Length: 82
Image 1 (cartoon, rainbow, N blue to C red):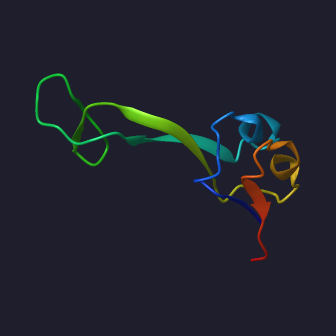
Image 2: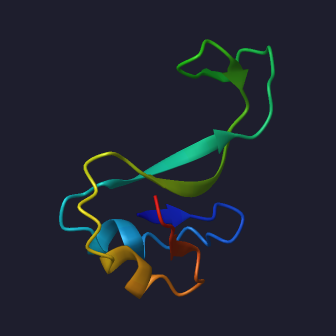
């Protein structure tokens, strides 16, 4: 099963584009929590000032074709035995 090493990910999106099933999705982490009116509310109800760099995760629809591993220029998508 492919696995994304988030600390190594450069956010290029090549893995997401290469996936025939679109099983790799982009997410962004909140930068910092705030309480002012310029913040946005995220899914869990927290108020944040902005979003960090993208990271990617692989959902359960992955068919383990390995396309994502082949196209990652940073080596951040690796094969992991389940």
